[in-house]
Structures are given as C-alpha cells and as structure tokens.
Length: 508
Image (cartoon, rainbow, N blue to C red; front, side, top):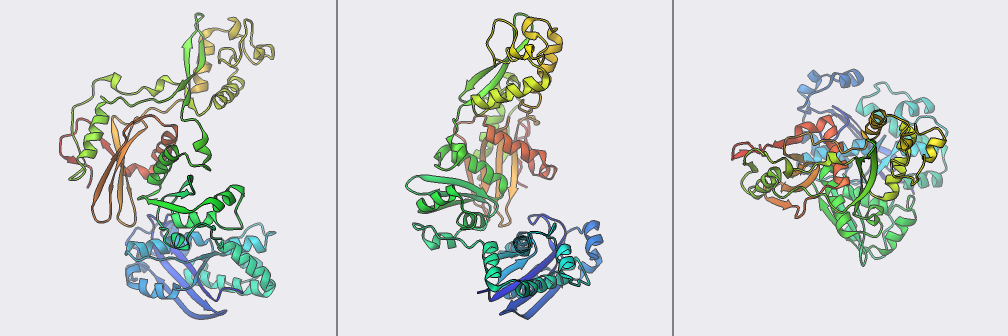
C-alpha cells in the first residue's frame, strides 16, 4: 500500500547551511489518500542578511521579507500540517534539516520520516541524465509558473507523485518508495524503545554486544543509526553487527568537530570489533633524515609510541589552569614562554605513517616522482648503485655521481607535502562550537595536540575534561588541520596567549 498521509514541502533559504542560514519562504501541500486536503504558503522574515544571489534566483527581496511573519509566528500552523505525514521534498535532507532546525531554535522537537523525490526519480527513471526539478518538469511536461518559489515547486512534486502512479504499477512504486524510506529492520536483540529514543543531534554512538562492536559519529545520530539497519543497504559487516547488537550508547556534542574528536578518542579506547581503524597499531612510524658522510640526505624509519607535549610547557600549564577555572569563567594567566625546549618540534620529522608498509610505499612513490635514490631512502640495501640507477631513474647519488646540493634540494622538495604543518599560533587555542540547543563546547588544542574540553550545557552547567596524557595523534592532527583550513571557522578560534592578563575571559 502507498503511504496514506504525505506532506509535500519546498523551502527557499538565505543559503545552503541549515546551521547558519534561515528559511525565507515555505510551501506545503498536505495529501491524504491521494487528495490535497490543505495547503500553506508564506514568506518568512529570517532576521538575517539576504544575499543578492538569492534575490536573483527567487525574486524575493529584503523588502518583501520585512513585514513577513517570523517562523515563531507560524510554526504551530506548519507543525499541524506536517504532523503524522511523511515529509516529501526534492532533496529531502536539505529541506528537512532547515525545517527541523527552525523548530529547534524555538525548543520545539520535530521528527518525520523523509521521502526524497530525487532518489525516487533515480530509482524509477535511471535513464535520465539529470534528476533535478528542472529535469523532472521537462521530462514530464509539467508547467511551473514561478520556478524557485516554494509553493509552486512543492506543487510540482505533487504532480510528479500523481504522474508516477499513472506510469508505474502500484507494487513497483511501493517498492521504490519503501527503498527511499529505508525502513529499518530491527536487530533481534535490540529493544524498539532504544531506537525510538535516539537523539536527532550531533554526536557519537556506540554499538554494544558482549563487547564494543562499533563506534560512529554523525550530525544526526538517529538518522545515521537507523541507516545501519536499512535492509536495502546492509552489507556483510552491517549484517554481523545487526546479529550481535544488544545496546546502543549515545553521547551528544555541540557540533561536528566535537563528534569527530570524541569518535577518534573512543575508537582508540574501546577498540571496537568492527572499526577498521581500531585494528591498527597505536604506534606510529616516523620518517626522519640524517646526513651521510658524503653529505647526502638519507631517510630512515623510526617507530614512535608517543610524542608528548611537555608537561612544563607554558601553553599546556596555561590550558590546564584555563580548564580548572571554568566553573566561573575560562581565564588565562601566566608569563611568556621562553623555553624553546618545552615545546614539541614536529618539524624534525619528515612525516608520520600508521604502518611500516604504508611508509615504504610512500617512499617508493617519492623516489619515482623526484628521481631519489632508493638506497638513500632505505628501500634497498646494496654496496653498489641502486636498482633505480640502472633504470636511469636515480641520478647516481648512491655512487656519488650527483652533487649533494642538487640531490638534497630534491629530497627536501619531496617531503614538503608530508611534513606536519607548523602550528600557526603562539600558544594554545580554544575552538568554540555552538549547538542549536544552546550547548557550547570549547576544545583546547596546542601544537596539534588535543588538551581537553569545556562543555556548557543549555542550562549553563559546566563540565571540564582534561586529557591525562597529551600526545601527538595523527587522527587529531588531520581533524584539527581540516577544521582550521575552512575560512568560516576562523571566528570560532579563541587564542590563549600566555601573557594575557589574569581574568581575561574567552566566554563572551
């Protein structure tokens, strides 16, 4: 049977990020038993900047929005329209995330099953080259008088749904809809109420059997966990997890950064059975260099169990003080650091790898790309010229036929991209992440090392968590570097300079 109650929804927004951008128009058509029983359309005052590109696309101006109702003023009516319905939209994840966040900003919960007409189109019309709304309109010969206006676009989706009922047998359409809905198949040992109570927030989830089975993270825990149990996408690993899982633990965070850091920590701590990363050794393989007696740079591998941020580092002491004072304010104090030995020197390493095999494979690639000597890279042991020299890929450094200065220059160039980037700040930093529910988290980082965090919940309660042992971690490095590289995250960084006056608060 086809779904009895559907709400066809389209929105226009100030941008593409539901966490920061806002809805400026919404159109809804509620369909019950294949008949439109109620419609709704309204502009919405976002109390936010309206980019000119959005005005060019939709025709909606800032002036049009000035006297429009806010979402708060119409949320009850919208909620009534959507209650009990499957949420249908073209790229449903986008529209649903915005509507859900708007409700969340007013402390109202909203949850609905989602049916994406883009996915439906791809399943039923695999021969179409494109499946955006313009393509649907063109292929089905629909008319849309006001394209990129919410109600008109939502009306097209209703027409498309009726079109599919006309052109496909009911059982084929029902199968396609169920596939798009990804109906979860409840694992045998797992209680239904556990799934029903999953939070729709960012964070980490842990699957347990008799031992920890899997650790994952998501911007929406509920949505991600349910996807594990969707029969149409379940693979061998998912099936094994489903047969063993008996309990799910969830830990919410303010946002994605907190979820990424927590996931990395828990995988290393719990060593879950089905996390591929947990099967790797915690010991790193470092590539270092030294000069031969003939003046050539040669590389060698060194196993490193841990690289510690020195306990007497001013920035670490300062960050520890910072966390300890968080019950009142996050404050900083101290004197400028003058001890260069107190800070780790990651620049002395050419690169880090998770296995010796990975390291050697990378060295072999660099040898070919930069015409480096495999003997000097530690890939070959010989008393004569290396094999690459006989293939005319090495320029003879192994035999002293190339000037050391020229060889060493290529050597340094080859490892430029592998070296750990210099820490771009003078000391520790706090990265602030805010959740739509009011939760805030401050992540303390120095020299790419994660020092701990301060969490302030929606009621203002604070909790500090410091790392007992602070070491350099490749996963944390990758997470933090990627985060800092994004320009929109720069405003979340609060620098904890050692010489700031005592009492300076970063919680404004």
